[in-house]
Image 1 (cartoon, rainbow, N blue to C red):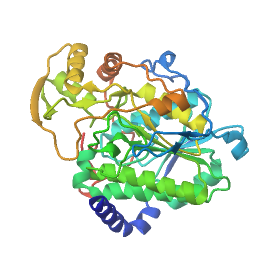
Image 2: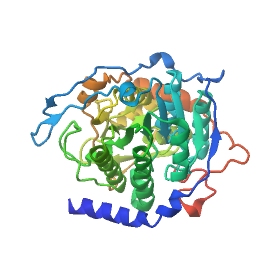
Image 3: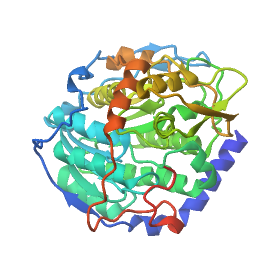
Length: 429
């Protein structure tokens, strides 16, 4: 516990000196389109396989889900229309050019929702992929703003102009291993910017419902399998996990202090078309395709990951938006951990090419197993992941084969997560 406190103290102390800089940083670029483009959706976007994510409406009461044996209150569904006096959902998505953010923007627009997206478009990984996602979201009718979630002036204008009913906060600095080398960036993006956004929501003319991305990494090396939302998460083993856990704690404080309705979503190893190039599915597909060696980390037992296809994740997020809980944390995973070498085999089959595998010890900060208990999301959200690893890999590889990065638009500017690498299109991938 002392280590955990020390990590957070260091993060908060270090990021504090950047507050005034970040609050006024980053210009913005607006593109406003409210109707679907004739070229949307793209051919690989298989709408017919996707559910609407409605589900059961859980009420009050108690349910014993606590690791310590205590009673934990079941999250209560909120009638957001009555609570906010609104008939139309007006949704702000942060990180809208990210993997999950872009898919969520497209789905919500197809569902007829009013969507505003914001993204800083940084170069943690290839900016050209982020531009591709941004353009697809715009074609779907998303109002897109290039800007920083830590920019209080920009947020104030957005909240005034759009009067949001919901915020889905997906913007974050991702990556477990990168966080070890660049902890300050994680404190700024994942903690400070979240507080900035929560402050804006708290002071809005009508307080929107706040949903935010957490991570399976908060479970650390827990031996309680599968991972339940109610079990202890006070021993993070990476800076990234510590900042995501801090986000959960800050959100809970705003719920307690200001009665803000908050929902945390712990995502489990998401993959699929438009995915992140620093994640295993993409990296290994690229290595196999190019005939290069890939790295497989080893443990004393099996290396297991709860791979979850993007469409299933989006089903869960859409359902959580509609549920609008008073306070909740939901695991969103498939609930079927896969032996990681099986992913390599599936990629080999779809790419029709054998992998060259280099084995290395599991690095510090990584865990040997992720496994979601999704019973709470199933019960309250009607969450029901359907896409198997074989089907998901097939869909991903079909898209991956067709993807070619395009040159950046003339005059396009992006921000850098590392000032020494301002002109690098993608620092980690």
